[in-house]
Length: 222
Image (tube, rainbow, N blue to C red):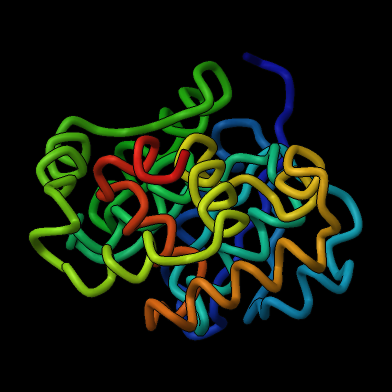
């Protein structure tokens, strides 16, 4: 674990104090730390990041969900640690969609260095409070959002296969899903758009969150 490890911070420029704190603790632990200020989904998908780092740390920025989704699509094997406000319920969608974990602002000074090492060893960081929150949040979608549950289970056979795959493999990339389903990436993307439009879901992060709470999907989507 003494080998140098590269970490890429993604954050809005206005969070200078938070950026400085994170960079200090990453570098103080012997790791290389780079910064991509004011990231956009277009920069990530447009090859603005030439080489994959060992880990992404996502701090507050505009289009945060979209930026995270772009990271998952382009770098599915690179863990993403999300840092933000002290509201754990905001991070359930990230974790459902494949994030390695999250830290509150107030935890950075004490836990950031150890969190990086734990993610390197185990691939995941979920503190006890988050785990309880995540499990508590997985109540039946049919009870909490019946219209969304109905919309997700009312699609074509092809859409149901895609949703079943996404539920079994959270954060799966379009290309990987296309390969497993023997479809083109464009077809997978189009079906995803149709599903989200019908269910009035804004992005894939929300979709993955709802899928994590949809019971009986395997039986109803056989």
